Image (cartoon, rainbow, N blue to C red; front, side, top):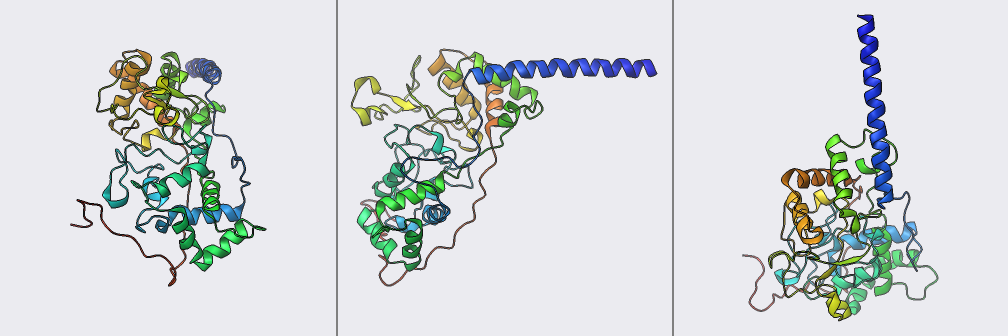
Length: 357
């Protein structure tokens, strides 16, 4: 009996040693492929020192629907922090029940993207924050009306003064965007199983997730989806090898071409970040695919020219679930109360549309 126990212990030790060696080798492959953990701390951004006063103000603005003309739509409407930082719709619903042209990207970890929006037309988060407020299909407001609204609320006037001290007129549209950016840089999701594994915990990922990572690297997914955010760093044609059907790649949306006017940018989009991807269905800029395994298989044929079988696509999708990190815990703010000077909501419907039943 004693000899049997000793032999079993030796066998288990050898198995653990072999498993550890396999993890070490795979970990080296992952790092060589440019796969990185979420960095610690609050990231720095250009031209906007992050302070507690800005973060607190930005949190209020992020949840305040009065930035929209209707008084109904806030940043959180399309970037719901309780649902992975997006709205889980194919394309977002905006002012007058209009359907937007593209799927809403997650705001979580967006600070790690090289630019914002699917076509990269906003260089950073503060530039991005201005876009939806003014877009007729989204919040349908005007900068001057936003400023009038904010200045009509004494608490906001006080908070802008604290967040932007030494400015003669701190309540501006630009400062609104800077405050929202300051809040959004805190919306990061560290502590995923992949991060724990990459930092040395062999047991942080399951065997299936490790198999999926091996495939993710060997099949070439890392040619587009690398870095801390597993994407968001560069632009690629959608349908590099095989162009998807019109349901997935609408022919009238030419992607980055609409920004640059360069013919080679037709149907080029920023590589989607894959952090928390299991929380953000449906997928692609068209929001046409709801199943993660199906999305992986489609990317295999469209981008890599690889026919992934069901097992391979399933294992890669299983690995991607290891990118789900700790979701930010955000306390819903109590917002300032309107005054007699606060502009009233514009609930006028668009032609041919109506609110309610």
